[in-house]
Length: 113
Length: 116
Image (cartoon, rainbow over all chains, first blue to last red; front, side, top):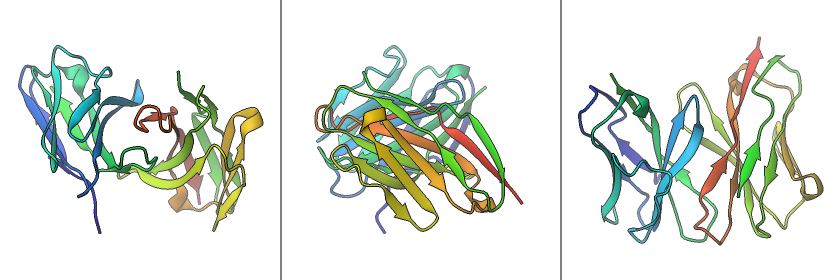
């Protein structure tokens, strides 16, 4: 049963610390999305990749967030330095290019104190 | 720009009642996809249905049914004979089809509470 996996599932950190979230897309999928869910903003797209190349990261605060795909089996989202307003659930999703279906991971719940 | 509006923030019903969740969307694309996701208290996003812009047939799956009307840009979701396990947040979403890699724009979500 192929699934998107995300680690860690929960992260509590202090303001100013670096946070790295990891996502393993479903094998063979070539599109990866990062979404953030907060009470105030709801679910919003942060960035997405196709064939490991970033297509759009306009939803990310550029000064502190970075997203990469070191290889086809790993996507990372880093926040440095973290701030309390970054507290949210971060979802990764994967799919095939030009196909509408996305498969979501379980999310990483981040709390920045 | 893509936009999805779910005007109902919260709905509370008693078990066995029918309930309809509204979704209105905006897009300039001629090819697009609409989705419904369920987010139970555990937090994961559960896919319920996908509908493309060329298929206006209504769909029924068990107690769930969906009414897609392009004329009113709506994609409403009805749960028949609701159950306590249906309690969750439901999101309507819009994909911009082939133009931008199928990223999703979500509505604000509707919190459904089904009371015993």
